Length: 441
Image (tube, rainbow, N blue to C red; front, side):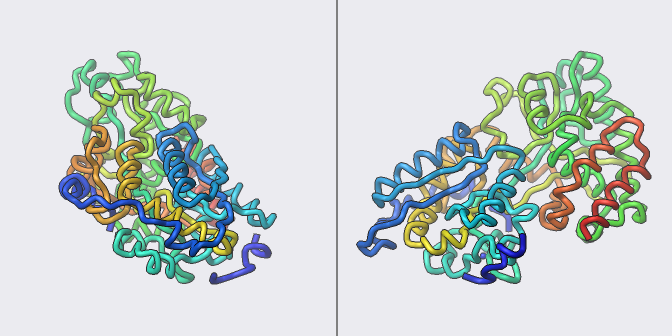
């Protein structure tokens, strides 16, 4: 896609999660800025087009609908919204196809993942450095988040949502088989899985044939690697030649053979995983904060978060988990840059305290902003648990999205599904993964 995307090269510490709840409520409220006078200067605004990966009827989509209504009331302008559902890669493919056709939306709301990292350098979106400063957002967005979204060609977009990615444990199901604490070792995980299966439950649900399984595969491979070793392996590949990576793959094989993962995990997708957990057929699930709001209320009360249990000889001192500042952000296309007077008030509204707080409380989004920019009053219990309790229970390890090349991570699920397939050898698994790296290179 270089020919179209290169049409222009130039035209941005994790959210302090405990601080969000401990220090935000006392922050001063701010009124939405008068965006019409800020950027329109009396001229007529051109309608803006927005593409998002949030579901229109999901908690994020419902909040955004209200925000759009306020934007339209404030500015007299209209918003044309396109929703691309799917596994997170679909919106990227859809947007890139629109770029090639010269019909891309002004704004695309998606995460910094896979091909997104190259959009500014390829000319698919514009760097937003100057907008961050001119629109007064450098004092709102956390500096660490801006750093994650930075690139040699400029800041890729406005960071908006952070990630917390724990293991969900249904403590009611575990209690039924005599387990009253979260498994923190792989031996305890195997024991729990055996007992859960005997009681009619599936153990740990994960989408072994899509991006969620890829993330968990890499997380388990990182078990015996320190942070720098993990980053190098994910960036360059070479799994078969790395003894510690092979230890991780053999760990996965051991867990598969001991029935830790739900039946037919190698063929499951993310939506299957969620259904298994929500319907209380599986007692554990591997998912992130984007799914908190969708957990049935009765199940949420029984859910406790932890990291992936430690294996003997692990490089980490606690169960592991991912967090990041590369969740959904606000990307501006070249069409958007040409329509910047209409885009500016929309972006400013997204970062207004009222809307940051609504996204946090109603949609369990963890905004990557300064603590006094959000009022978390009324947030659900899972959100509170994720931002207060989880960080004390886990070691956060390098996030694949920050290190695995985009074309590699797009192609990994098929290879990774082998790891969840009973009978696959460690050599076959590592070769399949290394072949993805070689093909991408």
